[in-house]
Length: 245
Ligand SMILES: C[S@@+](CC[C@H](N)C(=O)[O-])C[C@H]1O[C@@H](n2cnc3c(N)ncnc32)[C@H](O)[C@@H]1O
Image 1: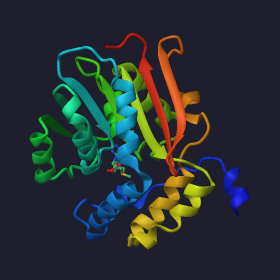
Image 2 (image 1 turned 90 degrees about the vertical axis):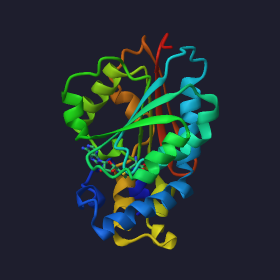
Image 3 (image 1 turned 135 degrees about the vertical axis):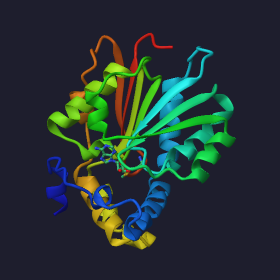
C-alpha cells in the first residue's frame, strides 16, 4: 500500500467541507479541527517564512495589497499577520472564499494589527474569469487550496494569478508517504468524520516534486520560482516577478 502511494498520480476528489453549508455543525467543527491540523503541520510558520522571503527587499512606501484565495475563516493568516505586522507597512488584505465565514472577532483582530481586511465571497474560477483588479496584487497566497483543482481549472487559476500579481505563495499538502500516513491519524487530534475523510483526500490531491512549477504559466525569464517540501507534511511553491517592488 505504501509503495502504491509513492507512485500514485494526483487524484482530486470533492472534499466534504467544501459542500457543507457554513452553519452545519459538522462543518463548523471541521473548521475548528483545521486550526489544530495547521498547528501540527506548522502552516503558520511555513507561510510566514514564505512571505518574508518573497517580500524581502521590497521598497515601496504604499500599503501592501495581498489577496488570499480560498481563505476560509481567515484565521490562518491572522496568525501570519500577528507574526509579520511589526515589520510590514500597512496591509490591505482581501480574503476570497466561496463561503462568507470570517467572523467579526477575526476582523477585529486584524484591525488591531492595523491590517484592513475586505471579505470577497466568490468562486475562485469566477474571479479568474472576471476582469483583473485595477492594480496588480503585491502578493497572492493560498493554503490548502490549490489542491482542490486540476486540469484546465488549475491552469486557468494559475494563469489569473500570474497575470494579476507580482508574487505568489502556495502551501499545500505534500503527496508523499509520511503525510499520507499522518492523514489517517487526524482522529487522534479529536477531528470529526468530515476532517478525517478530507485529510486523506487532500493528500491524494496534494503535490510533489516540481508539479506546480511545471504548470506555472509565467515566463521563466520574468519569474523566479521555487518549489520545495516544507515541514513534515507541506509542499510549497513560491514565485516572484523579476524587478517587482
Ligand atoms: C481546506 S479549506 C482552507 C482554508 C484556509 N486557506 C486555511 O488554510 O485555513 C479550503 C477552502 O477553500 C474554499 N473553496 C473551495 N473551492 C473554492 C472555490 N472554487 N472558490 C472559492 N473558494 C473555494 C472552501 O470554501 C474552503 O474555505
